[in-house]
Image (tube, rainbow, N blue to C red; front, side):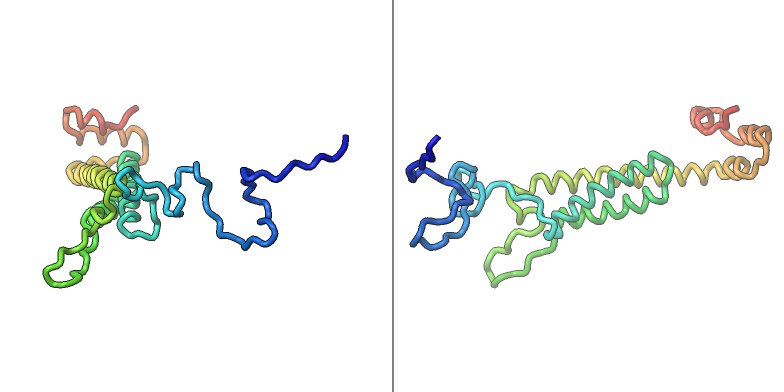
Length: 195
């Protein structure tokens, strides 16, 4: 079959092709149909505002909101799994990060009489919604983790004799005798040593 050359067409948009001879190199730009607006800034809303921003790990407010969510969630899990000291630590950190993410750093005053720039999550505008949700969720889970840790410590203080007896028991029958130190209610039935 003979080698047929196709004519050059103006619609040929091969991004890897070299520019034609005599034409200078141009900086790369995204294609027109890819959701961008052609100026390299990313998608814009109908009112000209930039679209939702992506998570920026260099922004301390966004980073603290994510940290609050993760620390609160893991603190709650450690509280459920019976490790209250780690749950208390993670819950306290999540409270700190969540509150600092919601408050943010106050913006310095630019000039007298001029309105102060928005600070904290308000400075992100419409992109603040996921960060605010993460910070509030972190606060809720942190509160639950701290509540679980304190209730575990309160239980150990209220029934200290039972826990000391159970930990010092050398045999199963001695451990079962520690059940007499528990009250006759639902809580006593939950903590009771099983045969």
